[in-house]
Image 1 (spheres, rainbow, N blue to C red):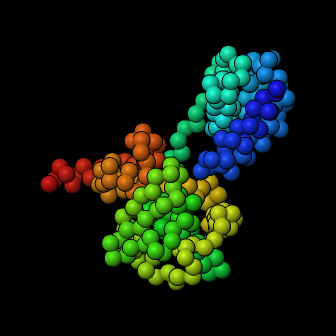
Image 2: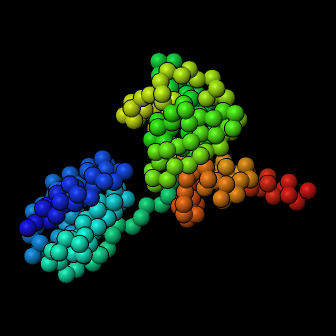
Length: 272
């Protein structure tokens, strides 16, 4: 039996039940395409995994390699503890993982919101409201695309999100601007944004090029939103209610406060 055999079993029995199955299948294809997958289980050693790590680091970022190795590590754990295979040690646990990347601190700078707005065209009708809602709510792309009109409650100024990354539905309070955006939209479908993730990705790529903001990622708008919520004076539980973070440590990775905003707040508190 080879590591590839283990990975195929993992793909067919474990990955299929995960909410993030498609990205994991992509990572599994990468693992299966590497010579690592042909290694026999009775000859597996940390050096085989080390070779995979080093080969991948030449092509992709450390974070990507860490995620691929996490799958491999879990696969070995299941094989050892639940599948009854004669594996004494987990080789992934015996190697040094790539260092975690620093959390991105990209936020919208002065004038960049206007640059995005000026670069938008009427041909992509959903882009302006989608980007505005991303900034006003902190929702991920997949969450925005999953919103259904029946879960939008404008009178209560909330929207219910059923499909989330962590699998826990949540109700998001809306800012006045978010309410205005949703109130002005035409109801074309059951979903607020009846478009595919790939269509949004391509539209965003074209938009940021036109705006001259090629270093800005769509996910950075989530960082922008979370940081703004804290600057507005919301507490950690209040921001977590909106963002869906269940671990305050993860929430801090999304928060990049502007020192000048904190200085303004301090000035008001001291004067008061």
